[in-house]
Length: 130
Ligand SMILES: [Zn+2]
Image (cartoon, rainbow, N blue to C red; front, side):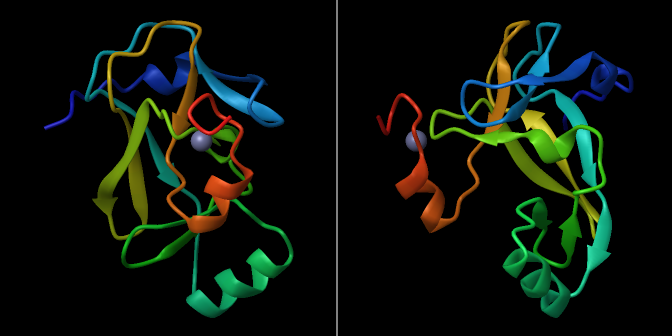
């Protein structure tokens, strides 16, 4: 089980990222496997997902059951891709996912995940890809 820390999301801030645009940063140390925040948003159909992606909405997650559009969220939509990611996305319930710490993360670090789709690896400029 993940350690549940209700207030941890309050210690996650949005700042300019060296990876892309804005990113999510932690202001506190986060131990491996800690639940950082829920990933929830508007639940949409596959058809609607395709329609929105064609309009460059890149904030849609899929949890195996539903497509979750996070474009209207304050924080989670800013999580950037890094092949050397420090966070993982895991199942939560049918309408959401959880962002957890994949390893110990230090205060000040940017939170990143593996987007896991083919095109991202061609565009990626992380230290592993550069
Ligand atoms: Zn990379």
